[in-house]
Image (cartoon, rainbow, N blue to C red):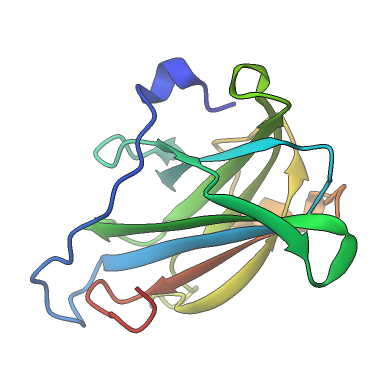
Length: 177
């Protein structure tokens, strides 16, 4: 579990576009867009993410908490909600293989948030290229496993129909900013 004590204070910021060539190796931006098919009894939602390389959390890029921006009805399932995060993170000097781990926390109030689900995403493909594109990631029940590898993901079972949507692209790609 990614605890508040491990990550410091809550942080949400608008990243600056760095003056980095579009094709520079080991540099990328990831976007956390929204969580879909959220239970209607969830009032507050936050995410905590970290990067993992070689079974260890990368400490040069601090894990961060991302607060929910808005919640609205989910157009894919009228009995559920969609939670928006609108978060962008530019990352430099993370070599393959690397994974993005995201934990979902929810509760009635900010003081009652509890870890509910987590997911993992491979930043690089097996050939070492950036896994660019838009992705819908399944969620697995907590506790969050910070040392899991992508080869173990097929053994995990998603216990919810909720999914988190992310995008991954070149660091200076302004198409989706």
